[in-house]
Image 1 (cartoon, rainbow, N blue to C red):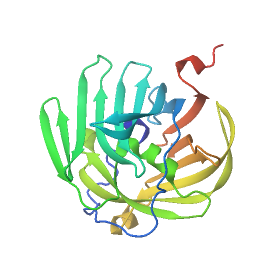
Image 2: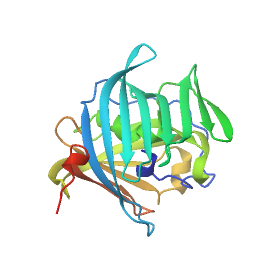
Image 3: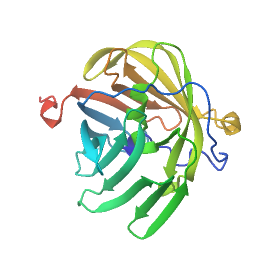
Length: 247
């Protein structure tokens, strides 16, 4: 999941600690269950890679939740447990292509506990508008589309791969409606822009992240672009690996 949102080095020590924001929020709704096939282009000279994202209703510690499984073509995978309505993260687990767990993030009692193979980290959380970086694209499905709104929120980052550790102010706003062509076809989409919030945003204007979601329910992601890194993720097909177009 986090490969789609390569924010490492984004803040360059400019970000201030996040505080709770008021105003417009995400819709209190339940997203649809979906299985989608994407291709990610890193934009750094690396090779593109395919992944399948499957979102299904489930249960976690006795409560209703959504479970998202992301499987990359090299065998790496991640599992996220999210509470909806609201989109609050509960558990994130990443696994390498050899099957070994490389990270776990557990959200409990106002804190997030990160466990890596050789270290542990804990971040205190405040307010109610925090979201895990790796599940943002799913949370954005519940954006109040069609109203030109802007939502301020906090993103939780794990400090891995050069990124900062903690919660930081971000925003996402609707900037228009466009016809978008991707390998899966042509879609009528709302365009969202994500950037650095607060005072730090003045110094980080070059860092913008764009998302295109279907204008019609269930508002799934069709395309994602990183302005600075020039990375792109596009929808290849609706379905799992069996939906991969064959020559």
